[in-house]
Amino acid sequence: MHIVYVLKSRKSKQLYIGCTDNLVRRFRQHNTGLVQSTRPYIPWRLVYYEAYLSEKEAYHREHNLKLRSNAWNQLRKRIDGSIEMAD
Image (tube, rainbow, N blue to C red; front, side, top):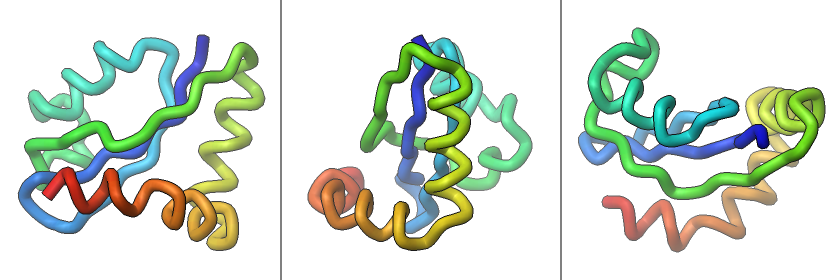
């Protein structure tokens, strides 16, 4: 199983989109400072995730969310309540 996930920093309005095959391990890495790009925004809260059987599909979805504003805007509209609750 491959997971595309969205994290929200509890410290700021920063959001992070990622992809992994082990969400529990990866989430722990983000919150313990092992991921350089997210270290300044610790602590993180998981606000959304999608599961895929195919690694290729999961990375394609992550790529689309990061680089195609329309895909991100549509997802953002669906999960805005979850993002607000993470504050």
